[in-house]
Amino acid sequence: MITPVPRRGRRASVRRGGRAPRRLAAAASLLTAAALVAACSGPPRNGAGSPGAFALSKGTPAAKGEIESFTWAVYAEPPTLDYTVAFDYPQNTILSNVCESLMRWTPELTTEPGLARKASNPDPLTWVYDLRAGVRFHDGKVMTADDVVFSLSRQTDPDNAAAWAQTFQNVASVKKTGPLQVTVKLRKPDSQFPQYMATAAGVVASEAGVEAAGKDYGTSGGLACTGPFKLGTWNKGQSIELDRFDGYWGKRAKAGKVLFRFMTDPSARTNAMLSGDADGGYLIPTESYDRLRNSGVGKLWFGEGLSTVNVDITNMHGALGDLRVRKALSLALDRSGFVRAGLGGAGTVTTSLTTRAAWAGASEQTRQAAFGGLPPAAQDIEKAKALIKEAGATGKTLTVATSSIGQDVSLLATAIQAAGTQIGLKINLKTIAPNAFTALFTDPKAREGIDMFPLTYYDSITDPLDLLTNFKTGAYMNFADFSDKGYDALVDQAAAVYEPDQRMKIETEMQKRVAEQLPWIPVAEWPTAVFLNKRITGAPTTIAYMYYPWAADVGAAQ
Image 1 (cartoon, rainbow, N blue to C red):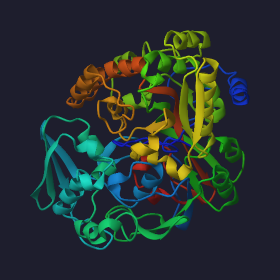
Image 2: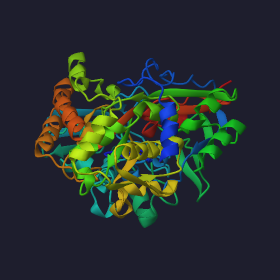
Image 3: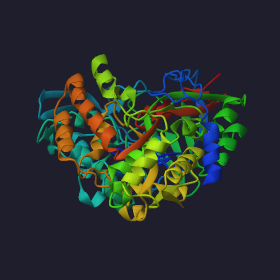
């Protein structure tokens, strides 16, 4: 699968995680055969006009009662559960049930109070968080403003290599201004900061607990958090257990225990769900959609994913530094064939890096401006060949990372290879183990020798700027060092505007620039998929599960 990421994260996944890379002649012929479907542009809604029929649901039926435990399949073991580096699917799928943030992202993809009962903005440079009283950490200690100051400060500590540090780039100070009040002062207005307080960037952990754990925090012992579950047994290489926290300040979790089993092999995950060894899972292998849908042992659901599948350009020092080569690859990609074969038909081809749902706060006029005039999604091999020839790139070699994480990953990598081969490029595939794929987002050495990799990016907030800011000079996920001073100015301008539609009018210009410059090549919108067997229900279907304590809602179906 793919793995977005991280947020500020970077939200990217290769799938996973992020988005994992998706991948001759035989492979090209497979995709060509699979592409006998008309391409269409736009986000997945009810499947009409897309390569495969699927319907989006707002959620699964509410649980009818409590359950002793349930088992969840995840595609990889988290390297750590330290909230400062929780940027990928495995980490956040688990962590969201253990650690909580100042604000909360809901299953409807809106924001509501979390550990802060109220957030106020008395002036453009000030955010005041009034905390809930009586909230207890898993060790029984009561949460204080000091814990909040400590937790947010860890995100900016260079010793932590925090994935969320960019979120705090405009923060001048974080101070306790009352026993249950914390005030954040900004250097300049920042419309994104308050939204990210609903993600792992806004997690609050016990100062005493984190310091007691020292360098082992996140990898052993507890997490010193406040969520409806606390960290139980971590069997390295096998599973993580979460135990219900009976001292939770909010609604009691319906399950007494959750067991997360690590299954890197897509077939093993699917078989576990079919046999009952796992009661469900997110990030369903796309090649298993039909098996699970027709199994009779449960139901496959789709929800809004705020996710786009892309080709991440990681090296612009070679042939891909020429815009004509990037445009040629985009023109040569068989998006429709990839959606059908790689995403199991559950997706929509697009040439937009942002999803339509991310523009929910914009007026219809602004949304139309954002998506009007984008390049066509249909293939044009002859035009692509001409661009390669004009750029003098015929015969140039490029390397694409791939992985066995899932068919969506391997087939996108194959689609890239097929596209390049048809237009005169030589595309090599470099296979990376699923557990190592996340390193592409954190370790520059892991990206050495790689020009591109498949990347599924999910937004962590309902705002296009979440993705679009990745192309600012020096941004965390700007792996190819793309730089455009005019674009940088637009990022800063948009970030300073709190009113959604006014901000998104600026973001429409950013959308047009990245569509023209192609720092990433957009391929498709992809909904979230979740499978539940007949024992359980209640899990949200949207991408909110990354930061919302979804497991607390899961209970008995009967």
